[in-house]
Image (cartoon, rainbow, N blue to C red; front, side):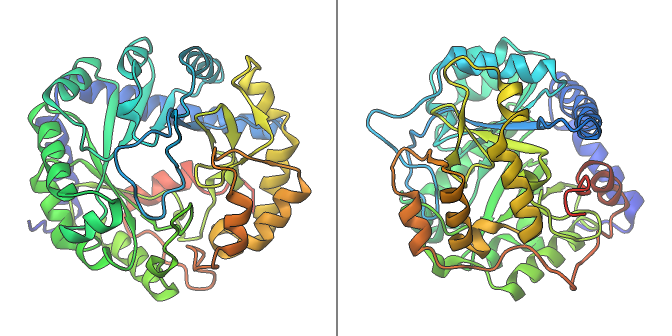
Length: 405
């Protein structure tokens, strides 16, 4: 796939979006996600000026049930599975809508194991839902339901090719089954993406131009790269990237954005290449399957819970815990405090008397044994965006909002 210039590249991406997905789904994506997403960030910034905090985007883990057992995953299957109540989920969405936030990342475990998920999504046609899934439970019926709804985009995780994927994910023929799920997304003309947690065993295979071109040929519209975090009961710290590898990954993303007609997502660097922590900025937070309000999905500590009927806006805006966390992280690093200094994070959580919200009652102990690893903070060696489109979008959406002074 050879695009001669930026005009050709943008034309190629526009052509793909106009011809590949269903037109109704494209309209939902442009309006519910694009236009409303920009407005939600604008309202987030206005709240900041008034000293109020409520995220522009909320991530919700609806269940900890899963059909795989991935290394480095922070979600642990319990018996019975922990699942957020449907009424609680409705209340969360309703309260976000009142604050002008219409975008939700739906996580698990495996969210397709949450019964009634699509019925609930269907009740909110004015919102947009990004479904983080391993893709192995995709069927004709599931893909058809997503097309019918129009306001949900599956983000399918690919963690390696062949044996690497099986080893990382604790299953058999995982890559092949995931590709079958991707093919169903294309067949039903969905807007869909692929996510990769980049580690030592998959970086060469998945963070390269050949792989991105293969995704394009399979009809994938966006790809999300993020750095492997050695957390959870099976952290596998030997898979964590080195500083040089993180720099190589960042350089690859900046370059591929000028070459391939596909959206390349990351949420951890601004337009100048400076590291960001969305939780430190306050633009995004996470609600776990037990209703616990957490800084982000892998940091499973909480002081506040929304499962008992309390108002989500009040809980987040008035949370001394979240406020202290934002201050603590922004003064400590621009990167990921969990990766860089788990000991300091543990001490902070002890000081704040935060609860282990993982459901396995072992996170404090896990932090004690966690090996510090390199994060995405490239202080002094930042790589700015080369693409004008990404530079503009990041400057106006993810430029730090004054969190780092």
